[in-house]
Image (cartoon, rainbow, N blue to C red):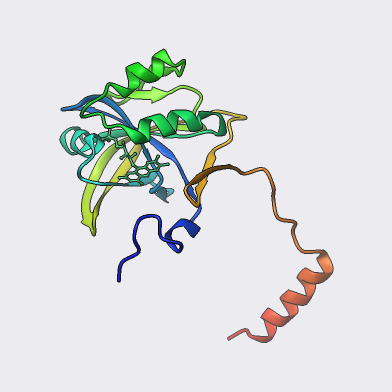
Length: 187
Ligand SMILES: Cc1cc2nc3c(=O)[nH]c(=O)nc-3n(C[C@H](O)[C@H](O)[C@H](O)COP(=O)(O)O)c2cc1C
């Protein structure tokens, strides 16, 4: 069965917004991608799922490299702008620079990276897999840096969220009780 865009079940997921930077037939581009996931520690691998109508898809297909810049809570406007027009028709990076957002040249690949993102990760694509209506690119991490104090944005129910409430851990007493019950079910 299908799980359509915007469906009540689809929007229950909580995702990051990876600002995917690329450079290829459409020039330098930036595309928000909520389907951005770390899928391996050793080596570091990141999967991004792109619709094949996007400029980012054509750029990454051609050059086999992309930047992952995790959007912060103070970059939601950047994501909105980059997510509503295509690099096939607009130079989004030039427009965003004029709006005050800053970029720098990636160290190991030929793309621009977003200054002040929660993390900046440079990837070389090692796999391209067509799955349903999106194409998954798996990127091997070749360079990564963390920006201390920059909080990633969450995406949920079609809106941007800040992660500023943690759920309290159970008390020691409650934990002991749960442990006892789990132990009774040891195989
Ligand atoms: C918050 C947000 C998340 C998005 N997530 C994805 C995604 O996971 N995959 C995808 O293909 N498009 C996603 N999009 C849509 C693209 O970012 C959008 O169509 C963009 O304009 C394509 O730009 P491009 O043609 O320059 O690559 C998302 C858009 C927004 C605003």
